[in-house]
Length: 140
Picture (cartoon, rainbow, N blue to C red):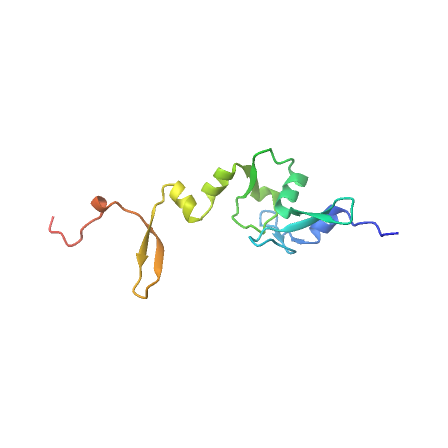
């Protein structure tokens, strides 16, 4: 006879550092390659099913995630499971809100890529059209 499984909320909270009320609630257990918390849920059989910890927290403390939506971390911390920091949005909106280069292009924040003297590149300077650049050497 197997021992009874600890209830999911107790197991969940054993893996969370809740910080203060408005702070991120940091997941302190297994994560996937992208830094999202992984929470094991029983299936009734010998194998457990892994779910994203932030999605589990949202569904437990806020409600179901609407079909077709993903959870956006408003705090930009993938290890956060604070439901107050999570919002269901479309995948496109989640991408647009992120800090990756594709998102910056989608928001109209075109970037330049400048080669530095050591041969590496610096990315992130705002893009300015050639005709809008100021010629500081001009006499005008």
